[in-house]
Image 1: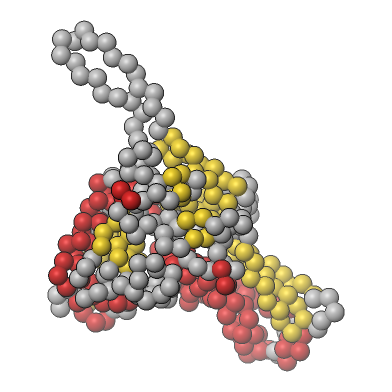
Image 2: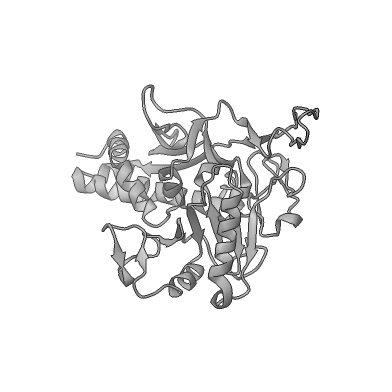
Length: 363
């Protein structure tokens, strides 16, 4: 008998974990951030405000005789960050003709690969590319925050700067999440290093960025996730000895060439470094040119704000996080519509414990 649209919907929901795993096999950013324990919560509205602690609240008073008067500090250490949470909808139609021809389990399986599976993979690839590299306007994906400070994102009609600048803290002056960057007044900035030649001092400068981010962390934790282009990944790989161990994989430990650049990460101190296909070493989105780059990220400094939440009593907040809706009979067409809905935004509460590195593709 023909495959009804409801059956396709039910099969998609049932197979969603498998479909997501297929995506995460090649795009580790979202999965790595979620598995790292990043805070994930409902926002309460499209415009979300949050407090950011940028310094200590008091002052030091030196005591010599013990009779010196001192005052309790009342410095304003809280600044208000603001983000807008847009809704992205990825809609696709399945023709009635294909449903009528999709008989039995084989027919349903083919339809799953042609439509729901391909759609969610494409949707998440565009999302990841926007977050890591930006410039997703052509794909209508530019509402998500981008890490790339060389480009902008546009959640509500106004172009906003990406989070991490490829510039020294002293020269960073963009407005990010409603706060003007400065390393002397607002203390709202990210760490940065430039690598002129990876073969000469690449690992040492990576260590500089790692240590700078660690020392300025409010959480006393080093950055634990790193993402880079494949050339930069291989440059770092080649500096390690023959017994290099990938950080993860099917087996508890894999050695030498048995790992995979995209499935498994390389350890750099306590940071797990991944190559992501969305990051290229030669793209127009990087204002600093064709020389590659890395992000060193502290998951504790990020959080994901969502519109809505999951079923009552559920653990995961799923509403607006690539949720599938449908099927809808399309008026005047022999077709049914389905929609993947995303209504979330990534925000940062402490830029100082994150780093941007450029030049790592230059050997």
